[in-house]
Image (cartoon, rainbow, N blue to C red; front, side, top):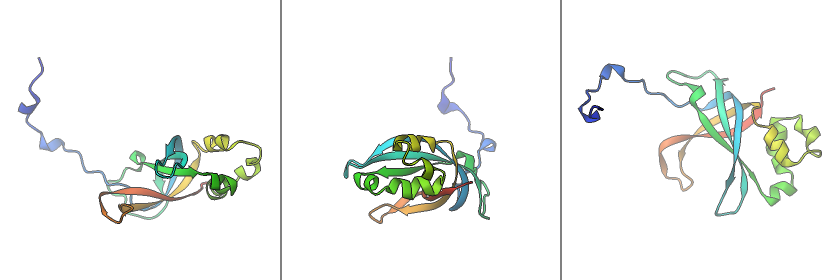
Length: 151
């Protein structure tokens, strides 16, 4: 028979410390798995990568921060215009993975995007405090403002 959980006395000595989110700055990270995304308003499609932080590169207060628990999405939008102008290559793949410049005309975009998974990157983070309409967010959220090559 299980004990009624509402009759349990809470042991205040066992509280876990609050975990702070990673502060804005640059981090060594790994580009994780991606999943398809779409914008219902515009019809645009893309891939959202999960960015796994590993360690800070800037000198910042990391008290009560566990960067290994941070999971931040980095969207890569793919439109007809971005495909015709090679924007996906020129703004994401080649700057982050320079060796892709040699493969870009030999492999389909899907292969290049898939090969990015698991690769080390440098992620620059900011905290987003307002929504698109300018209203304050109750809880600030991370925003990956840029990725760079880690090699």
